[in-house]
Image (cartoon, rainbow, N blue to C red; front, side):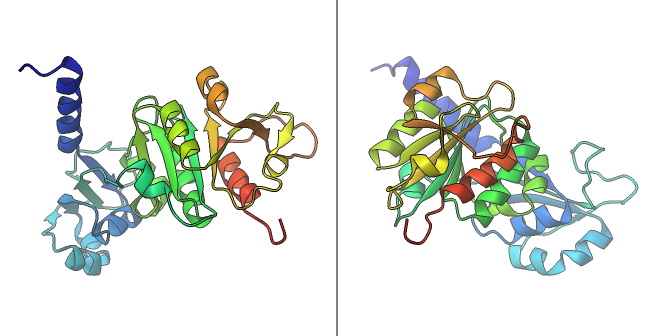
Length: 260
């Protein structure tokens, strides 16, 4: 029996994902990846100085480094990258399913990114998510920043510890979270209520915060499926926040307070 076209395409996409590799660069990003047992490591290129500085991590990872001349670094990365003499080829991390990552004891907090494509913004969001205790950062497979060396360097190690899930359809992911009991709030500077007001009396509920790209904001479909649109309470009118700053403030504002 011939397989349906959609099954064939899904299998091809899975194989392509499995074959994908990423070059991480910079001492901090490379060290954290070397020390991450979940990360599949393929090839390490370092200068003599970087090898010495990463000696413990290299030993822990059990990988044989390739030495490169500092004046002519041989890793296949952008020559303008601030690599600090270290580059590591890896496969993307597999964090599991949405349910596996987002189900857990309350109060769960997750971030969803709607067309946030700048790797530096996503890297900064991952750092904030880790510091403020988010269970995951979720983005669509298309029209979102993939794992890259630039993202990892900006994340300053958080990419190795903070789940970053790529889903096929953001609206479907929102529906799954709602079925798990999440209150899903979309960030909109013109919304009539604040995050705190929307969560009043619901401190025991898990919360998902959806942020759109700077400029266009949330897509119409995303706005339709969230439970409510909310804004960050601000003093005066100063324009919009950078999405990574908004993510950090929104996570903090959604944290349950004593007596709430």
